[in-house]
Length: 117
Length: 117
Image (cartoon, rainbow over all chains, first blue to last red; front, side, top):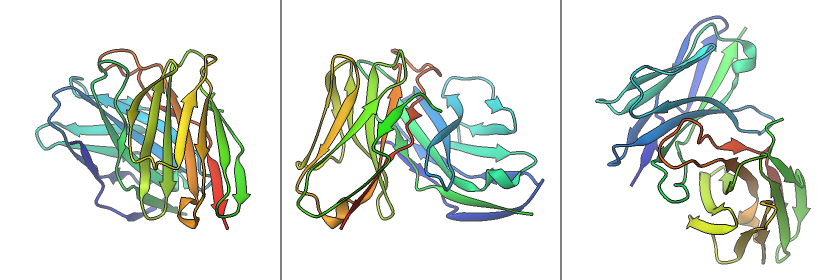
């Protein structure tokens, strides 16, 4: 079974600082994908970044980067130069390889990030 | 705008009633996923449809049912509603190419917030 663990229920960071949100995962499937989503107070789920298990380099998308350590089974999200608009709930998620149809995305419990001015 | 349309955005109803939530996937996406987000259970996978066929079931109650129509829109039917069914219901769509492509990102709609009184 696949499992995602986010151990930080909440984090408080000063504006313009970098922040790392922790995510560890567990799976027996050698092929999988890891995702981070942002959920602001308005409620929508916004895709941020994706990392495939066979990707050689860590994924980056603008101010977002994924610190992927396969041996440790961790996929931490790093947000550089944090902004007030980064205040939101952040979810780490994982899905296995798609064979016929697709496999469900399994989510962690989330980390609530608050950026202080 | 994510391209995934969910209606209604908000719904207030009474216990014992039945409601239908509607989802139109992103253009080109064949897969539709339904998730339930509640405070105590987090994000829970309910059901997945691919090109009109049910592909996977998660923690979906027998009182709930779903279908995907030939035009690929999907409906989630919730009946005999209970207070505990109050939650944010998300629909997400994906192209779901075979393998582990980064293109297989779930794009979420804005959600339908159901309140059962």
